[in-house]
Length: 144
Image 1 (cartoon, rainbow, N blue to C red):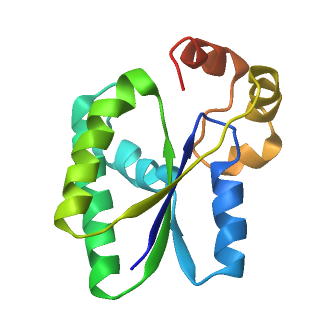
Image 2 (cartoon, rainbow, N blue to C red; image 1 turned 30 degrees about the horizontal axis):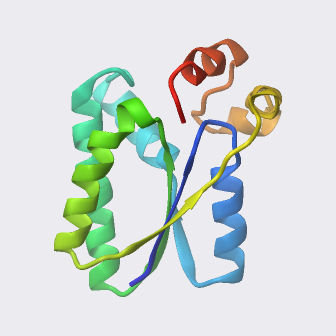
């Protein structure tokens, strides 16, 4: 089983790259937003709630475990913020190590002005994604 982790700030194009990569490989895509789209309304949790991220990680790891057992290759997208995500990623890497899964990391970056243009793109409306420039600017204050 192979695992590709595509990470970066909102609106950088993680899902777009993941879908394109999946088109030319035998990989399946598990996007950050797929999990949040299920968890947030179902559990009525906000992004700031640590319980959301605890459940998010458990489900994501269980999916990866199942993919390992069935020898399915995965592309996982992840919004990464150095201040918030680092402890979560360290725990995640420990769990992957126990599963004997070595992830391949792909970091996507873009200029702030490009992210601000992209965040209000109409293609984002069909997903539960960050859609407002003001929110992105607030998030950008912490490092990606």
